[in-house]
Length: 149
Image 1: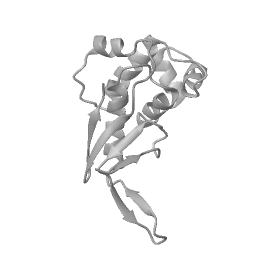
Image 2: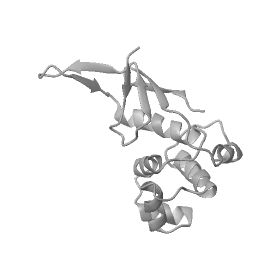
Image 3: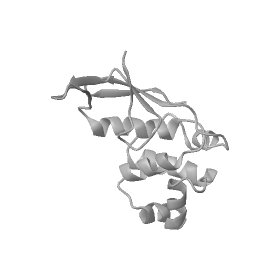
Image 4: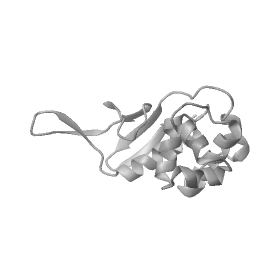
C-alpha cells in the first residue's frame, strides 16, 4: 500500500495510505483526491481524537474547516483574537481548557461522530506533546481514520 505525506491541508503530520496517483503530461506522479472535503473531515476527526496538545497548525486547520475567523473563534473560546493568532503561529501553547473546548466545538460544528465524551477529550489534552501522525486509509472516494489515539 503506497503512502503519501499530504501537506496540501497545511499540516505536517497527515499520511494517506492507498491514495491514487496519475501521471501528468510532464511525466510526474500527481496525487488524486476525489473528495477533498471528506478527506478534510477525517483529518479533523483525527485531530480531535488524538492525544496530546493540539498544535497551532491543527488549530488553524480546524478553525478554517469550521469557516470561522480568528475573532469568531476567540469569542466562542472566551479569549481575544490575538490569543488565537498566537496559538496558531505557535508562539504560545493553548491551555488545556481552550484545547478541550476547541475539540468539542469542532466535533459539534463539523458534525463529527465521536465515541469519546468531554471528560475523555479533556484527558487527551494533558500537558503532553502531540502524538504521532494522523494516518488515513484511502479507498476510491472514501477515507477512514486508521489511527486516532
